[in-house]
Structures are given as structure tokens and as C-alpha cells.
Length: 256
Image 1: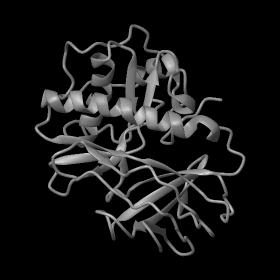
Image 2 (image 1 turned 180 degrees about the horizontal axis):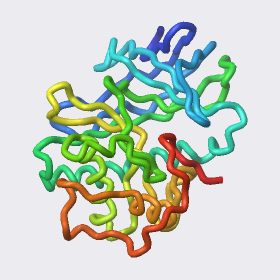
Image 3 (image 1 turned 90 degrees about the vertical axis):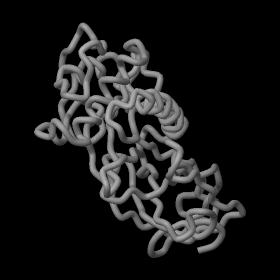
Image 4 (image 1 turned 45 degrees about the vertical axis):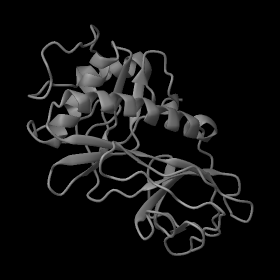
């Protein structure tokens, strides 16, 4: 538990950098700086199809004592080489879209976005040289939609799940049909006055954003499963082709 971070149970982090983070209030960015980390005995508390997830705590910096999350690829995952660079690239594009959405004042509340940092396990770790994403932990985590167009709470047409569907639709419109922001997940402020998202996916016409970017077929699939709600605008663009190309699933779909 030295210099910046410890992850639960047998995680031991030793590094010469300290954590800094943007404040939660007054900005749509919720970030930590680039750093390097080491791990001697990681214990995952959860997992997805291709990645392990562990929760820990910051031990230095403005977020001292707060929870954080680490995500790293399982052994043999075929996406690791470029995924982290593409993930950071997708977060930057997502922030541009979210800023534009917030500027529209469609909901009278603010959408925030976690910005992860890429850390590297050092040589004394059993994961030596492997990269991991570190980001602030989100309380009350829930998923709203997937990159294959699945809607997790389709019956909620007036709350935050509906807002997230509208945000995805807006992303296509505001980018002139080039991108769709999706795989939206995160937590809602206790007072309902805002939400913070994490780990978004960008679908693009030319598959610019790596393994989770399902390209034009992903965009087509998303809109084939999309139903406009009260937060969508009648003049927002939609693609001409709206055909299902991918199986609906709560989890994130990866292409090979």
C-alpha cells in the first residue's frame, strides 16, 4: 500500500508517481493521471468475457481513501495488443460527444465520464509487462445498453435509461452519421441530478476504435433495435439501413 494505490487482499502497489484526479463538480471529466503500477498477487473480484476486474483504493493524492477499479485481460486474450490505446481513443471521442449533449441541455442534468489511465504491471509481478486500466469506482453501477444494440431497461421510457438511449441516438446525429456512442454503463447520482459513465464503446463507419467497434454493421444493428423516446428529437438523423447483424447480449460484443 505504497505511493498511490492498493488493490484488495494481496494487491501491493509500489510506484513513484502519485494519483491526481479532476474534481467531480464543475467538469465532465473524472480522471486520473498516467502512471505505472506493480502487482505481486492480483485477485480478481469479477470478470467479463475477456478481462478480469478487481477493486481497490487510492492511497495518495486527491482521491486518497476512495475506491478504484482495475481491469486487465485474461491470459490468451487476442485483443490486448491494441485495446488500451483504442480504449483511450474511444474515451476521448466519447467526451466530445457528451460535451455536445450536455451543451444541448436536453435533460437539465449533467452526464459525466470516467477517464481511465493505463498502468503497467512491473517485472516482479506475475503479470509483468501487462497493461491494466485504472479508474475511479462507480457506486450503484448499472448498464443501460450494449454495443450490439441491446437495451437493458426498455420499459423505462422517462428516466436515465431512456436518456442514455437518446444520448446514443444523438451521437449519430451530431457526428453526421459517422459514430455511435454506446455500451453505456455507470452510476446515477443519489439525487438524480447527474450520471457518470465508464468504459464506453464508439461504433464507427470505418472501425476506427478497435475490437469493440462493430463498424457500419454495428451502427445498423443499434438502430434496428433502437426506439426513440421523449428525449430524442424528431430531426435527429438515423441511418437508412437498420438491419440486425449481431446477436443481442448484455455483454460487450467483440469482433475478431
